[in-house]
Image 1: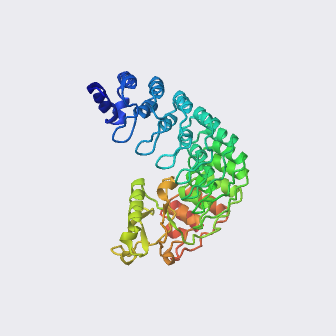
Image 2: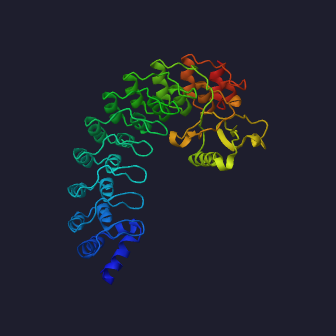
Image 3: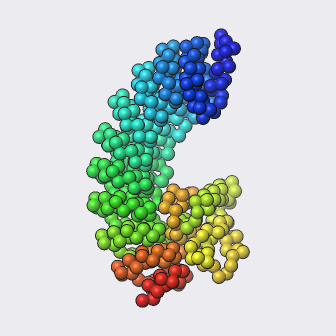
Length: 432
């Protein structure tokens, strides 16, 4: 039977929030050790199915874990979100506790509610020694989470070069793609410009031209975010500089869009062709907006496309040009309501305007759900020069013109780059 003292301690430890538990420090450790030695049911759980072993593993209390395991605590119990003591230990980098749990035979590839394993959590947080220990004991290196991410993708995404190196040496597949966006480890590394991780991937045969669901490559995302060193590495490994994604944009367009002058110059010097394309319709919307506006737009879009509230109508995103020339999303609604209550002098377009400055493709790229359609007849068709002009990137405009960009090309509303330019210096460049 539990004593009143034990019950009180359990309530204190397991029913308050983790932050409060961590704040107790040495006092918390003393209480945990006392409970580990005296509690009748070593697998007692709180309302979230968390055990004393899980708490000890999270906090790095090796002695408490040793006592609980010796007394028969089950290392494979899962909390309400599917996490195990080993996952908590791996996530937080507690190597000795991981070893203790291995001695007691925890299931290596057990997955929590999102499909993550102890190996994935260690890789995600750069705990190289734990990754090596888990691999030595048979963890599945290419197992995917429920959305398709692998340990290699997670390590590359966060720039943990040594973990990436270890995983590749042990046989991680370089070009595995996740199940929703079809992203790769190389594309994930490109988002933040982790060149060292990318070099390892490319040396192991990663395909620099592998495209995600929207057609984006590592070169395109690196160009969007202005990672010049990363781009140079990709070009040295044969990346196709003029490859287009599904909406018609390429690396040069994305670099021009965000005003990355050094990247635009590098791409042009390596054979990128300005005005190679016009956008030809898209399943993504990129907007020049604050993070908050982009988030609001995504929420509206997601809600609008719920089957029980949408009746198979088309969704139209109405974009207007503000007085300073930057494009802003101002309205998102059902097709029959589109274009209502708008100043007739505004430039209206649907579906595609690449005018983002946020630099975070996860924020600004709003993917449409299956079955939804934009009005492609009114899709804006922008060139590299137009994108640079509308966002006021003078040096980029100059570079593009020097390399032969055609300032007389027109979009689907018969407007040229000059019509979109608000900056007098750019207007002057375009009239020379």
